[in-house]
Amino acid sequence: MKIIGMIMILISSTLIGYIISLRYSLRRWTLKCLISSLNMLKTEISYSKTPLSEAFEKISEVSDSSIRFLFSNTAKILNLNEGYTAGEALEISLSKWKDNNFNKDDIEIIKSLGYGLGNSDGYNQENNLELALELLKKQLADAEELGKKNERLYRNLGFLIGVVIVILFI
Image (cartoon, rainbow, N blue to C red; front, side, top):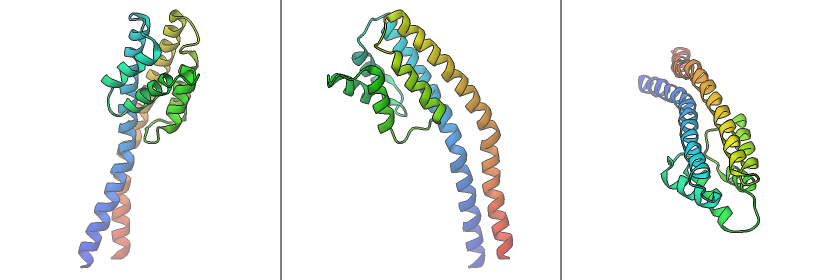
């Protein structure tokens, strides 16, 4: 019975380490999907000259499920015609989006992107999107570097903490 308990402790602590390390992978995936979707939004605005609410709807239909809520909810808010700007709609969507994997810097970049959408001509909106994309690419590079360091650390740390607890029980 004691051995089963020790095995359960070891397995659960290892799983906790893997779950913590998974957050780093999810952040990288979400950032990649957001960058891809923003590139599509840039195309919709620049070349198709699609209105923002329609562009957000189109992007939400083809976006990965990890970020679909952001675009679909922003489109819904803009379609309600309650006087919200694209930036305000995007900020409301960000505040309602509870299961995102972004950190504070990522969210600030998205908010700053929203302030330039719909408030200027197509050229300035394209420049604003380009700036946001560059900043998000830098965030992605930072997330990849951080993930390389911390993912393995947390996996090993979870296992080692389990080993220490098992040794203490012996």
